Image 1 (cartoon, rainbow, N blue to C red):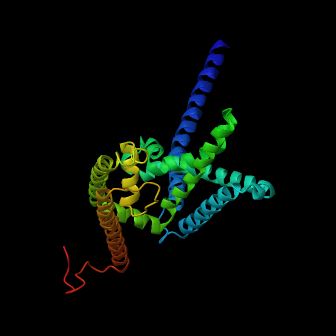
Image 2 (tube, rainbow, N blue to C red):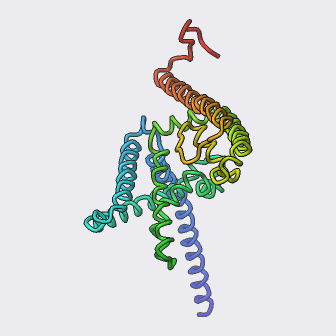
Image 3 (cartoon, helix red, strand yellow):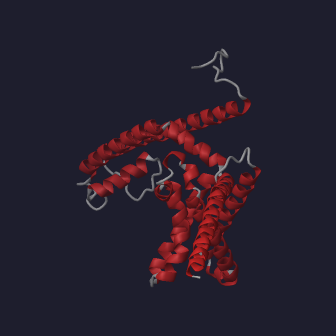
Length: 305
């Protein structure tokens, strides 16, 4: 009797081991398929929210919808500044703002989850790279003002400052607009030249402000009382704005002011010319990529290196 009981438990143990083994084997067979399906799904999501709008129709429609939401939200922020309109449209403004924030919050989470596809060579730290990227910070700042008052007791001034951060949404158009991306690439082409121009402009501003302070301080101690006031005059003159709140009265000061205004015309024209040239070059390069044409000289049609 005892022997039969032992045989029964031994056979039961064997059968349980076989069953457990089958379950583990089937689970291991299903798990890679599940993971593969999840990865394909996430890749599809990434191709929609951050894909090529020229080849992916869903990505194109998503970009149009997102851009429309951004423009509507910016318009509502402007309408909020009119007290009479804010009272009439308070429900509409709040409802639209809530929908926009929920949509972009969901988008932020999706971009965070699909960040390994954006940084394929740095998959482990991809979420962190997205969070600290320029557009990642813009995405966070555009939705943060909606959530912070729920957790932080703040005064009216703080709430107004938070509202300003909602304007960060306009920078999200950098991601959705092809024209804005083209402008960004054009700026990238001439960043060295722009930095050099800004450096030269800064030197001219300091030099002219210092000279004008020495020349006009005795004649106008209230107007040119320090270098700060002189620097303000130099900025207004060099940019050819000329507000007229500060101006020279001495003969030498007038000569320097006229000379500065002439220099300002050239300094303002330099970055404008650089930007227009780079913008045209970027548009031409984009057209050549679409048509498959080589980069050729416009005069002799020879291929350029």
